[in-house]
Image 1 (cartoon, rainbow, N blue to C red):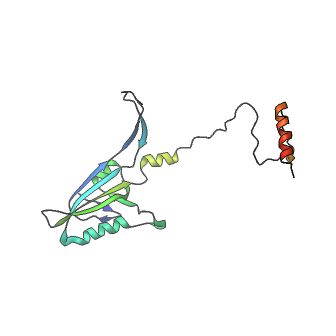
Image 2: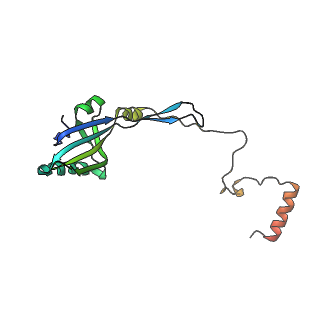
Image 3: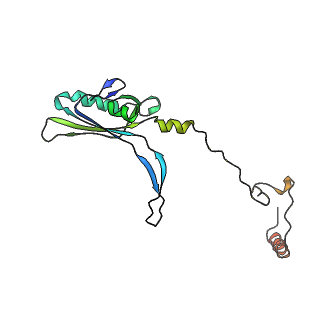
Amino acid sequence: MTLLLDGQKVNGKSLRVTANLRIESGDMSGQTSNTASSHKGFKPKALTVALLIPYRDRTHLTEIMRLAEATADGGQLKTYRLVNDTAEAFGVRQVQFSDTVSAREDDNLSAWRVQFTLTEKLSNPERVETRRPGNKVHQQGGAGGGVAHPSASPEAGDTAPELSGFESILKRVDDYLAPAP
């Protein structure tokens, strides 16, 4: 099995690639035992890579770390073109390092057990979603008049609303206690 990132081979022994597709769904049953669920879309595919690197080949581990820490313009993680049989079968072409890169010492062998995750970038569902036209926003309106903005002044041509008998008495008391300048 071979794994190439931008044409550079990931070296190691016992290379294993596990591909995962997460299908997001939501439970619609509420408090009942109903099994209804809603489809919320496909999440990016992930490839988990596991391999063994002997201590004498420490440069291979250093190279994996260099690939994982590489950034593109603007400080974003670098996106790699991927060549691997499992990835090709899953339709994965471009990936980024994600989650963790781990290297632990093997108990019996003089080697590191290395594991890392590559997440799909620019997946087919993502491309379809960006090409799909957005939903139009409709202006909602209700019966009755519009509400005036609080900063609108009565001098702008608006007239003061007519007050009821009790409200006019309260207005006179308010004007008496705090006269307008």
